[in-house]
Amino acid sequence: MVYLVFLFLLGLVLGLIAVASNPAPFFGAFGLVVAAAFGCGILVVYGGSFLSLILFLIYLGGMMVVFAYSAALAAEPYPETWGAWSVLVYVIVSVIGVLGAGYWFVGEWDKFMWVAEEFMELGVLRGDFSGVALVYDLGGGMLIVCGWVLLLTLFVVLELIRGMGRGCLRAI
Amino acid sequence: MTPVHFSFSAAFILGLMGLAFHRTHLLSALLCLEGMMLSLFIALSMWSLQLESMSYATTPVLLLAFSACEASAGLALLVAATRTHGTSHLQNLNLLQC
Image 1 (tube, rainbow over the protein chains, first blue to last red):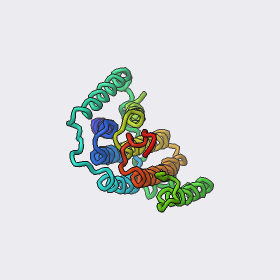
Image 2 (image 1 turned 90 degrees about the vertical axis):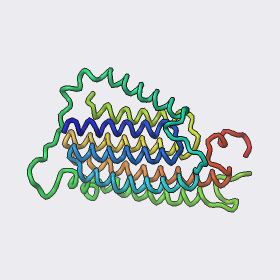
Image 3 (image 1 turned 30 degrees about the horizontal axis):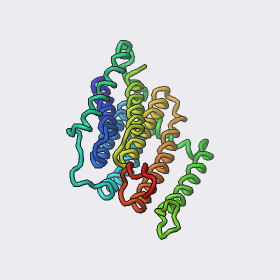
Image 4 (image 1 turned 135 degrees about the horizontal axis):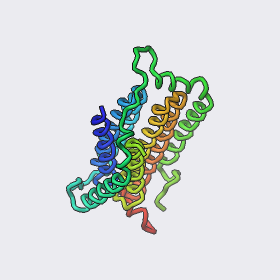
């Protein structure tokens, strides 16, 4: 299990390196999907299966929208992958930076590498299920705020993409 | 600092540096923002899972709702900039006139 956790953490960091190293947006979205998948693995290992399901369905569903946008709007005839020299410089510098920072902290990792899974018995409700369900009880105020923010975002998007000389971003 | 803390901190810093440095496309900057949101989601989930304070398990979900707002506003800006400027390169936004 420890090796599995290490593999997932490594995949998360490598996925973010793949995003942050400025490839073509098509490949950047692919790196973000990889990072989100490994993040789901981390949450499953630590016992948050419902949070992992939310991350996998909603976040990766949103990523599919970004992926379609990247295919449509930022298409290039010769997209840069991680093998191109300008991207490879960012990758190498990021890997060296992460390894250097990890070398700074690696001395105290041996006593933290266990997995804190506390819900070993068979139960109907896991902790994160009932924890997320509290948003309808104690977190009702934040639920209303979230709904209001999503409604506001709808009108923000509608105002931003309005064309015909009446939108908020115009070529004068 | 545990390995999990180090990993999501490194992921957040990597996303922040990727956002701050030079991007070719606006969509790459939005992807870096999404990566930062991913590391924050994992950080909040790890907080409630490792401390076993399950009433805090709602905070990653709320963060995910706010990040959906951020992503949709960013994509709307991308569409608007592509319409008015022709391309979505960030170099175009540095120019004084379109």
